[in-house]
Amino acid sequence: MTLDQDTIQNLAAHLEDAELNVRAVTKITDAHPSLDWDDAYAIQHAIRLRKEARSQRVAGLKAGLTSRAKMKQMGVDVPCFGLIFDYMSVPNGGEIEANKLIHPKVEAEIAFVLKQPLRGPGCHAGAVLAATDFVVPAVEIIDSRYENFRFDLASVIADNTSASRFVVGGVARGVEGLDLRTLGLVMEKNGEIVAMAAGAAVLGHPAVAVAALANHLAARGEEIPAGTFIMSGGATEAISVAAGDAIHVRFQDLGSVSMRFV
Image (cartoon, rainbow, N blue to C red; front, side, top):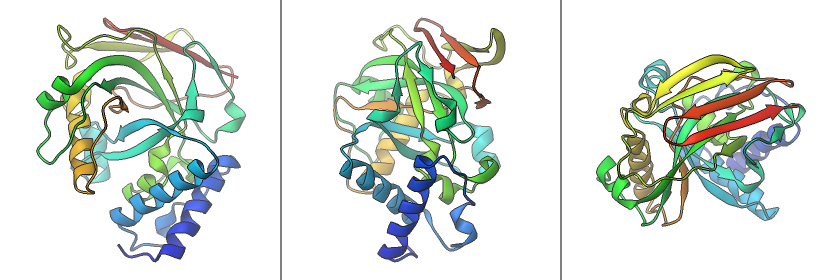
């Protein structure tokens, strides 16, 4: 780590205030170029503590930068990880107030719920599938607090990987008999197809992203508890949305997820 605790707390307040006040800011590495990954996760943790002090609770975990193309673009070989909170949950078919977000984008994802804890190091996709209770379809609404959605990896980790809102579909299925690698999905925006993908778009298999999360937490002496809800990362590209837009995503074998921006 390169930052002292006061700076970490100040940056956490700066980024969370940007979220709460719907205000874009410059990426924090402009002022702190030596900020490293440990600093970034420390800032993310400080944001968590700020939210929990207001009685907001962690609703699950999330992976980001899970497509090979995006990882190459960012010059990294591992995903990044963040948190989703209870206030970010929107019911399937519900409305999202666009004026409470800066520049939202939507990604379709396969989410996992565990029946057993997962601990690294050495966690792999097979262990994830064995520990999975069921999977559900989901859409994440990301909303970077940085101007023009421009950031580097350390800055986006500190900004809780752009977490903003999420919507979960009503179909839950065990992984037996499902090939998550080839499971297809189609995203429509205002009735027009804007993205198509399969589970393999996420690191070759979405369970690989969950395994990477378990290994990441193991390096910090933590595990993923049983019952945890985990968003495995965007299978589709991130699609920009604004007030008046309607999003509908159809998942093979998992039903659909929809929402409107108002």
